[in-house]
View 1 (tube, helix red, strand yellow):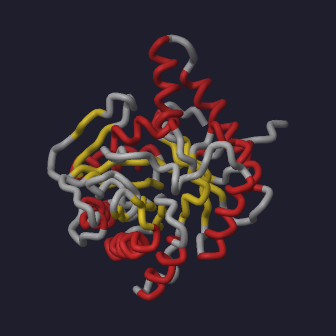
View 2: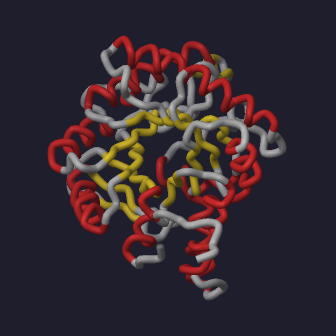
Length: 305
């Protein structure tokens, strides 16, 4: 009765990894309970989850082929675009958010165009905007740019508006840190950079004031929801942003945070239910309005909230 924080599981978003092909299911070894699946198996998973009450998802595409133009990211018949049309045809009650980035589709694994080992910000914006529009045209309810290129929110907003999607919201990865907690995700998505790292365009873990600057810029450019990623090591940043802006705030409880809990539970070093409950309460207590988490299915299935 006197609890200051109450976690509402309807505020949780479940991520999914989609493969090209049919009848495919590949367990992600570093993320127990999470798999890469083809769209036919994705529909089966979503139908089962929907019966539990999960009706908000985030999609990541894993193409068979990659190139230096990330052409699969904005292909009308790309892995995400095809999955979107199937989901909207069979499960229209699910709110689908799509990750807008180029790293999964680039042969070099970076989030933008590369020339002579340098990541080029401005040429990347055109490809990101094309990707967002192609997702909208295929049925996305919301797009979520995660690349951290400067100016990408405005580029996407302008392209969506020009394409007749002026009411489609943007969930921006506004304060996305260059983090070691992304390791399992990079195994899942096959998106590790082939050279260098992403520290030139993702944020430095030592900076918090900068996060406020990034968030304010994204809001000015047209972001409807802003995000802090990762969550656990950046609860102070979530709190700072919550007190800075009055737009909805999302936090991403990332793959490494999920994997740590699963490893602790498997080794008998901690109770999984208590760990998940404490983590979720901490993220919402810090100020998040919604959380993307791989724990979402377990939370619903086991009625932890």
